View 1 (cartoon, rainbow, N blue to C red):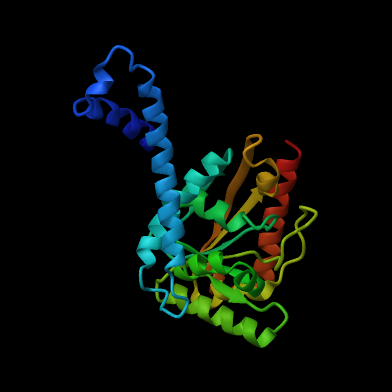
View 2 (cartoon, rainbow, N blue to C red; view 1 turned 135 degrees about the vertical axis):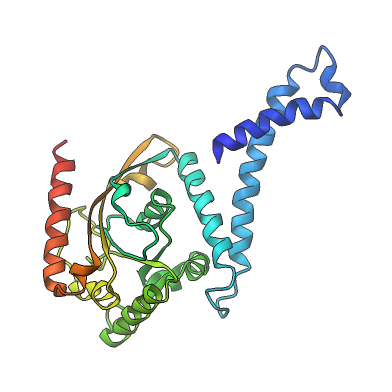
Amino acid sequence: MIYFYLVLSAALIPILNNFWEILRKPYSFWLVPVLFIGFFLGFIILQIGLLAVSILLVNPKTESEKGNKYYRFMVNISLPLIFKLARVKINVTGAEKIPENKRVMLVCNHINDVDPAVIMSGLKGLDLGFIAKKEVYTLFPFVAKMMKKLYCLPIDRENNREGVKTIIRAIDYIKKDKVSIGIFPEGYTSLDGELHEFRNGAFKIATKSKCPIVVCTLVNSNLVFKNMFKRKTEVYLDVLEVISEEETAVLHTDILGARVHETMLKNLEMRKNK
């Protein structure tokens, strides 16, 4: 969107020149860059402001289906803009492996709270609703409103019964073709950046819904907030493999967990040694 706004801002100058006589004066050359910068910043502020107002207007008691496409569109065009302004470049590899026109379960390592936003920005064509710890919904009610519209689900990691209910809802979302589901099978953010053991029960989402599993890794997203605006951050989102629905339908969750863990670990070691 930044490049679109740059072109639009430049195009508005000659249009405005037809209606504003002062721009044709010999001493008005300084107005051109001022108006260009003003238009450009105005478009950015307008878009981010529209997103913020849209989120504020969300009623948590309404159904997720209402306005879902609008909010998905707003997120898809706003996240890349926000990351661009924050000097974050998301390098995506392997996206061509993701099957088209299919709901999937995406699994990834988890090294920062911004990870879901990074993945959604990098894989805009893949409508994702993430399973997130319930604390996010209480600590960040503003973010929780948007999460609701994107079919994200809270999970209570300390209550197995409630956790099962979340898994069942995620399975239902995939079966009813509402959204693809993203999970972080470690169950929490890795503070040391290393890949930790998985909670393999989450793989039931794929085995019960018989959907493909998209295996990904993230590198450097833990530097986003540290470097924001000060220096450029290169984030790497690698799509490693897709485990077919035929395999997820017959493999045990422990086998799937071990396979995914090994695949992720190899890629993270490779990235570390580059």
